[in-house]
Amino acid sequence: MRIIADLHLHSKFSRATSRDMDVESLTKWCGLKGITLVGTGDFTHPVWLRELRAKLKPTGRGLFTHRTQHFMLTVEVSNIYPQGGRLRKIHNIILAPGFEVVDRINAVLARFGSLMADGRPTLSLPSDKLVEYVMEISPRCMVIPAHVWTPWFSLYGSNSGFDALAECFGDQVKHIAAAETGLSSDPPMNWRLSELDRVALVSNSDAHSPAKLGREANVLDCELDYDEILRVFRERDRSKFLYTIEFFPEEGKYHFDGHRACQVRLSPQETRAARGRCPSCGRPITVGVMSRVEALADRPAGEAAGRVPFRNLIPLEEIIAEALGAQPGTGAVREEYFRLVHELGSEFAVLLDAPPADVARYAHPRVVDGLRRVRDGRVVIRPGYDGVFGEIHIFQGADEQARAEEPAQTSLF
Image 1 (cartoon, rainbow, N blue to C red):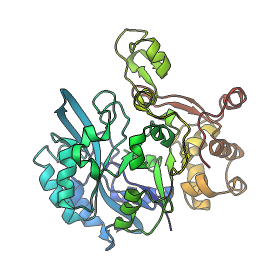
Image 2 (image 1 turned 120 degrees about the vertical axis):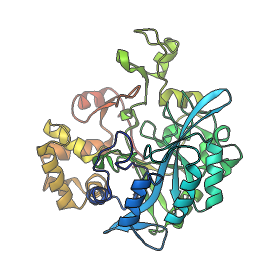
Image 3 (image 1 turned 60 degrees about the horizontal axis):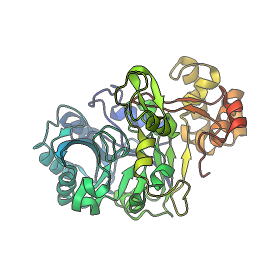
């Protein structure tokens, strides 16, 4: 069966997160989106964990259900610690097969930080020790470094990360079987670093509100079984790991370099010419994902043989909003969104599967045109930088851009 899995998100108990990130809303929106399996997020938070225990039912296969929606017990933690003369700030995701294992993990992690303070707890615990402790508790767990290229709080982050997996995880690197690419990078960017050949490249939404669920996800062809899903990741089973769903990476808020205070956006080449300083104020710029990939890459772009494929998508609400000249979440946009989802089954059914002729039976013609453009990669993007999301346009200037150059990003489909 086809599983669309989004395993990294946050509950209402994380900072800067919607109060609607509760079990009921996650169930509702996963149904609208077409997400088969969703992470719980935040299982270290005592109140959220109590809510999960009360509302989720075990399937007997390492997963849980609320009504018809399947959940996996997950959390993201923030590891902050000194190493090699620098303060390291690394976010890691933990997957767990049951509440008993979660209780044991939480008992250990509580020694290194307050689990009540935030759904994504801050721990004074090195990443290698985190992996060691978690794997000692249960080898069925998995630790995945999160959004590995983000300047702040990531494995390869330019401001507080490392240059290699082994520098971060030491002898525990043997347990690292997957890495999350994050919104500001896509698989081809990660393929340029040969050490990532040994891990599965996974994609998740890191959603802080229900409407953001599924903006990145993993598409698998396997049973809804915790151990089987982790096996697919660990073995990088191409017959079962069909593809990932990706943001256009330029839309991510750290794709390019820049200085938000001065509204300065720089490509890697422009950053080198400016010697890493903001041309406006002279302060150091925030080095983004593209520059960091260029710095660490040990092979040229373009090698894709034998890789798990990917598809670049834009959320359906954003397509509808631009087509109608409105904002996502407004009445007209939501009305069109809910009608399409109701008639065609789910958001992913519209984005991935439905022939344009079927969509045209229910949607405004301009929405159908927008869907075609997204599927073809005919979009125009001003890359994100220094915490500012990129500006993506499906119609505005798209035809002129297409005549002048190749599409901003193409998929393998």
